[in-house]
Image 1: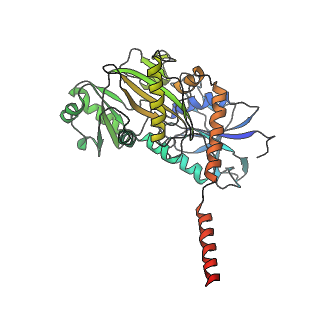
Image 2: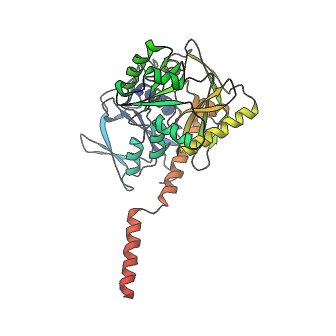
Image 3: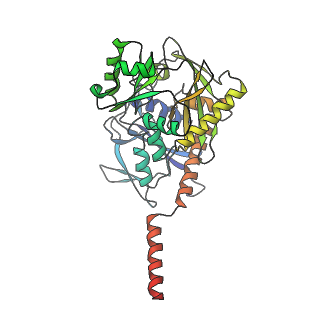
Length: 386
């Protein structure tokens, strides 16, 4: 790539998950913040059916200032990516016309079909650098059951939980759940974010409906103890040597937990204490734990780690990790880096730099082609000696 030309960044947004609207909000902010002196931005929107389309930078969203109604504009060119180091080209599927090379992809896809390793696997096969976690980190971060078991194996404290699968009839009942977890408790889909499908259960009357709601979004659900204490979030940035931001605190207003509406629709749904009013020792403990969780879960590039700081004993428990955190105007990930000294545009620069760094690092690994060549050369030498 010539140092004189702009880096062509494909911003991939929308998607098939229940977090489609959150992705649109995040993409809008990222697209506006990318430095046009350094980048040529290519907008690739994915509609709810999974169709990829080339979107116009001037009119790619409807109701863009209303989080409750925001929508991807229809009618863009249907496109696909051509894989391979010499390609990485976008192609118009109707005319078969080539639309230029993509240097790096910035996935802004929240939830299944985007944050779970599916798109990351596609981009890796296509030999295109991309921002954020790879296949393993993305898949592990999305599945809260697997995530919690890996953290537990590594000695990282998390809330107690039970697993439900196979539908409501096969899941733990109210008596079993309350004996193991107490009340109140949370019921949530295992593979979703942004608080979609989550219910806080206080009694038997709410339990069955909470189970049914969670199973609307996933085939696997978690029943989890409620932790009394502060909700803390910490941003992590890096590949092999990640660093953590100052932590922030979420204080839900008028709700029992940090709901979807409080996160993305209602600006007054929660108070964000940025940075959190914590003593230096606690800040350092949270930062260390954030980096530890990031590494245990095989993450790269970026992630936001969410914690509970328990009131009774000050224990820090990891709630979950988000490998493609929100980038909306009220999202914690960029806000925490801003208060830690890294501006929004510079954060985006660094994320793209990390994508290229990992790509170049991985190119140094032996591939099947190189291994086959080595084996063939070894066989040839053996024949010559024989």
